[in-house]
Each structure stands twice: as C-alpha cells, then as structure tokens.
Amino acid sequence: MDSDVPYDPSDVPTDVDASPDDCDEPAATACAYTEYEYVDAPTTEELPATGADADGVERAVWDELYDIEDPEMPVSIVDLGLLYGVTVEDGHAEVDMTLTYSGCPAREMLMSEVEERVASVDGVDDVNLRLVWNPPWGLEMVTEQGKADLNDFGLSV
Amino acid sequence: MAVKESLPAPDELSDEQQEAVEHLLYRLADDEFVIAERYTEWQVRSPTLESDLALSNIAQDELGHARLWYDLLEDFGYTESELVWERDPGEWRHSTLVEQPFAEGDWADAIVRSYLYDQAEYIRLEALEESSYPRIRDRVPKIVQEEDYHREHAENWMSRLAEEKQGLERLQEAFDRLFPYALTLFAPTDEEVEDRIDDLGLRTEPLDVMREEWLDVVVPFFQDLGVNVDDAELPEQYDVHHSEFELPEHVGRDQSHTDAWFDLQEEFTHTYRKLDRHEANRIMKDPDEA
Image (cartoon, rainbow over all chains, first blue to last red; front, side):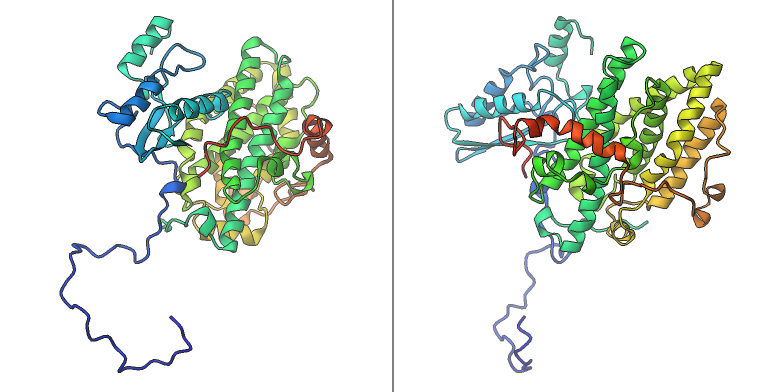
C-alpha cells in the first residue's frame, strides 16, 4: 500500500460481494509460499515408482528406464527402486530419482544415462532430472522382480 | 522448543537469514570434506584389509555427505570450484579436530578421532531433523542412515585396543592430543550468527547443549575403557551454566586454523592448480539443480 496517500474513509468500494466464497476453511497461514521445487520430496506418494499404470509417452519413458541397469549389478534401476516419480506433460519430462548411496561414485554416469535415454523417447522434448534423497533409499524399495534378479546374481535380499 | 515456521526458498531469504544458513552449511560441509581428506591417508596403510576397506568407505561416506551440504551452498550461486578448489584456506570453517595430521602410523589416532567426530555428528544431525530450512531437513535421514556403522566401527576398535596395555596407552595419548581439538566441534563461527541460527530454528539445539550431550556420551565411554580423562579440561561437571573452559588457540569455526590445514589444502588442490584448472570438471549439468 502506498503510504503517501492519505486515508479517506469515504473511499471504500461499494460493489463488494458480501456473500461467502466457496472456501470451506480459511487458509492456515495468510501468505503461503511454494517450497516444492526446493524440497527433495518425491512427486509420487507410493514408492518406489514403477510406472505400473503409465500409458502413452509416460509408458514409453518407463520402458526406457526399465532397460537401464545398475552399473554394478544386473538389475533394472526401476526394480532397484531408484525411481521416485515420472511425469510427462507437453513433451516435458520430470524424473525424480534417488541413489542408493550419497557417495555413489556412479552418480554422474547414471544420471547422464537416464537423461539421455529419457530424452530419446518419442514425444519427449526435454528432461528435468531431479535427484531426491527423502525418503532415503533402502532395501524395502527393491521390487519383487528386483529381488529375484539380485538373487539370480547371487545376492540375497 | 516450539516448531519454527519453515524458512522460504534459497532465493527468497533475507540477507541475515542467508548468512545464518551459510554459516551452518559451512560448519557441516567443511568438517565432512576435511575429515574425509585425512581418512584417505590410511588407504592401503591400515592395519588389516578389513579396516582399510572400512575406513576408506567411511571416507567415501563423508565425501558424499559433504557434497549433499555443498549442494545447498550452490543454491546461493556458488560453484564447486569456489567452494572447494579455489576457496582461500583461511576462509574454511571446519573444526581443527579434523585437520590434525595423524601421529605417524598411529591407528589409535584415526579411531579416537573418528569416535569423537562421529558421536558429535550424530548429535548435530538429530538437531537438524526438525530444521526450519526444508532443504537441510530433507537431507538428514539419508545421512543418518549412513552414519550408524561409523560409530559402531570406532567403538569396536576402541574396545579392542583397550584390551592390551600398549593399545590402551595409545588410546590415552590419542585422547590427550585430540580431545582439546574435539571441543572446537562445538565452538561458534560467530556468536551473533550462531544465536541467529538458533532463533531461526535452523537447528533445534544450541551448541553448548549439544556439547553437554556429547560429553555425557564420550567421557563415560573413555572412562569405562580405562582412559584417564582427569587432565582433560572438562567444563565443570558438564554444567551448561559453568561451561567456560580453554579451547585451543585455533578453533577452525572462526576461520583460525593450525599450520597443518594450510599444508593439507595445498596438497589436495595441487593437481587442480597444476593442470591450470579454473573449474571443476563436469560431464553433465548438475541434476540436483533446483
């Protein structure tokens, strides 16, 4: 508000609709800010994300992701439980992904492979790959298929 | 302590808020980076193959954690080069515990240092779980998940070393040498900024309270092993209200460092300078960019 303008009590709007609006509850805080893009929260509630219900371009992205193996073990990164969410809208793909380990030496390698492979999918123009850490990855993120693959490799999980 | 309202995104912080966040992040990141740098000196020199792998792995963990914290400083526009490779060594904020050279060939030094450090790290991570800064809060569980075995490793080794007279003497020497520096883990970077860190709820325990918690854990543990702590200048009966005691001349947090640090920094930036680098090599855009 411009404080240089003196307050004029007669200068009040007369056309305000006094009927209640359709808000059920007033906002808890008057001025919320959007923090989403700065928080490592996954975009999917159910983890790991596996794309079970995906169709169209998203389906094609998931198929591509399933085809990427962990650099150290013959298991898909999806079955390993590294994917936390995938969305594609108007050719723009958002991929949320974690790593098993914060000091992962394959970080750059794996991330660039995911970016390239997702970008190669028909219908994807650009990719925003986000590394998220919360909730932290654990063995519970490994899918049944992933457990079977790791068992075949000689790892019991 | 009441839960504080979350702070806004990095680019919406006031200057004072940003300064507090930066001080906190430098404390965390620099400690992790420098202790990892020291640990790597034990590679292929540890007493057994298992201990060699364990300490190397712990070093790798701490580098991973340093990166998680430096990432958040990059939110403010700093680059990796500015933060690590080209930052004036006189501007780093790690505790002087982590920069100390190891007494030559003394495995007990590495173990005691790791014990003192990791117990402190655990306590400070607990105080960040409810941080008012979402970017910090979010990274804590991942780090905690990877810290548990660090303490287990150090405790097991200390118990083993304490079983024999010579081992116990080495523990004693390492304790006497390192303990004063370990107290600097809880020293303020700047009193006024540290108060602001607490007032903003960036951390839910102030430094002196965390220090008392840490003393309550580490002092009895050393005593049970048979290490004499009487000469350590402990705050009087661990009482927060009587906690004045002598810190070493260089505490690190306030950017004062021992000569060993300048040598170490010279060493780990040697290749970067030798190759006339001006930026850290990147094979791709940082995927973590917010």
